[in-house]
Image: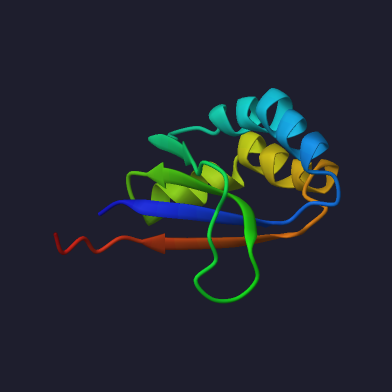
Length: 103
């Protein structure tokens, strides 16, 4: 069963800085997380059907929850998490879950 980390980034104070830093620094950090099976990023704009708008949504995919937990607990996973303070001035909601695909 696939496990996912979903990161919803709030509107940053400086969108240009966020976008530049995210592409140049954060994505390469995230790409080094062990056993990462996929990394998908939203395209702007992100529509909010309810609640506060988001600037960007990232989806990290792993084989299962045990792999996700081990990968995010690795030095590379911890480095990616610690990097959030360098660009995510609008905050970030980070969710982890196993998928149960019905279709």
